[in-house]
Image 1 (cartoon, rainbow, N blue to C red):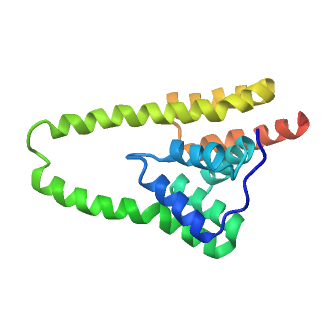
Image 2 (image 1 turned 135 degrees about the horizontal axis):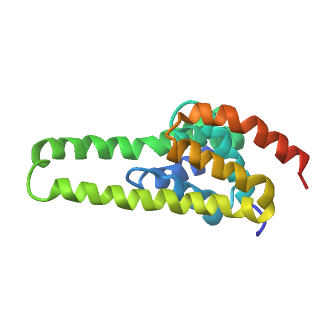
Image 3 (image 1 turned 180 degrees about the vertical axis):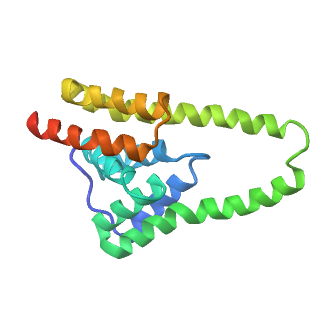
Length: 183
């Protein structure tokens, strides 16, 4: 991968996370990954995956936690506030407007079916991001990463166990294995 770009300040974080916040409906993680890793080159693939893993283990929405962590990492408290405010301000304004419009026109025509169609597209985005995140892990550590990915999928996706239980069971073993087989 090319070398990383210069460290962003609060204004750059605000603008970047504003674009992420306004890019998606139902989930912006794919857009955040593209912005942070591919477009702006503020994080490597590994750094993104590690930061996302941390954010998934913390309370709150993953992308909000991620914007806080990344903003803080690059520009301290001001960076964290700028990134979170950038991420949230556009969508909040959009939701207020769309909520008012839906309240007025929501039951008319084919709008309910169109909203169901958006759900399918959002699911596809989640699968695409999962594949992009899993790929480097599987390539570099196929024997130590793949079994834990499969176990997490079975536990949360198929067995429908709470994520906290699955993380509590799998994470310590996964960390131990990663340390034992690190390069």
